Length: 506
Image (cartoon, rainbow, N blue to C red; front, top):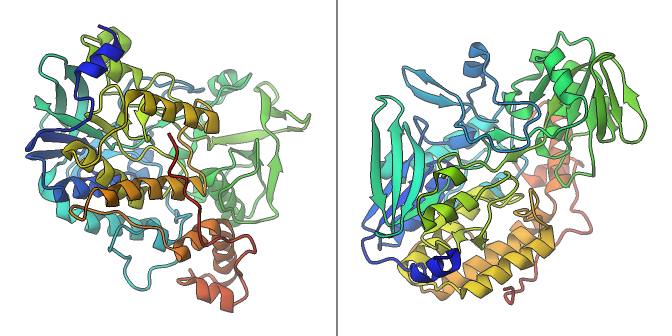
């Protein structure tokens, strides 16, 4: 039987029977949001959420001090260009299991709090316009309390398989406290475990030799904690990457250490970045010469005496609990194995959510350049209605056309799931329209208002204004009006208050 024939023989509509069982992998900011949608759908008999950590918050948990003490790095190899198929390292403590996250000591958000908020759940009064990590974690933990009775903490999903005959998933978990393992059957599975586990370090000529000779000189942003860790660095520091983490780390190092920092970039960033004249922008890396500690760039320039290189180059898509090609025992397993190949994208999904060859499998929180908290509620509400039968999936041909349409827009690989503004708003509003058309019952995600769209279109100047305000005053601003009144910000001429949504996409 081919995959196409198999897909046709399965639940082509994705509609599940009343009281079906759902497994959710992950109870972080995305898992909690989608879980509320499934609970409020009042259709599913069992909802079981597996979370490998000891509590809520997911990637917003700050764990760097624990891992620095143990001298554990998150890079399994340098360069790292393909999924390793291994679970990330963790540490057992008296109060539970700790997995390293990308959150660093002085992190604040790059998105105004109003755009981060879940539906009808605002941040507390007085929260800064761009909250710091502690405030975000506290907010997410409190929001997540409603789903706590469904969550099994310290439970890592180690294997996900599909039984063709029973049309059920076999979810194998390991209790990381007791080491007890268990395999259970579920009618459907939602993956909400995130994609910030496996750092991506691109290969460059000489990088492997450099890392062999100076193993402590090359790192990834996931291992970065604080600028003070670099106080004794006498040589040059190069930050590689020009997205959110690259801009943040370069700014922190330059301003707090009051020193020169080089930032290697391939293109201009759409993300906000603080300005400091000690940050020197350089081109993409051509090669590295470990014998002379020199880094050469594609424009012919070079930097001598390089002591630290920090790769802020993102993460690979990695779902280590899926079967590898050699582990496939069923047509369903074959579909699961095809979802992640080289780590660039997750394949064969409709709407970046549902596996079109196996529509009882969903992935939530995959798109990039979005507001993941609010999007998780919308994606969850849409998927819950698909599985309860209130939203029908289009034909397989139409779902394939959707993927081809996105390939034409973004290309294959690491940019495939990018939803840069205004695509993020358009995508969310298309889902919201289908959700509204399904009736007034159930959970609803956040609707974009004109004020929010205006704010979304102006994130970059807003963040840069808030950084300038903080640098000059030592205080974090709470309201946009304060930035306007003090002369740090004015609405850009190209700020927009509406986005045209084309509902005639495939």
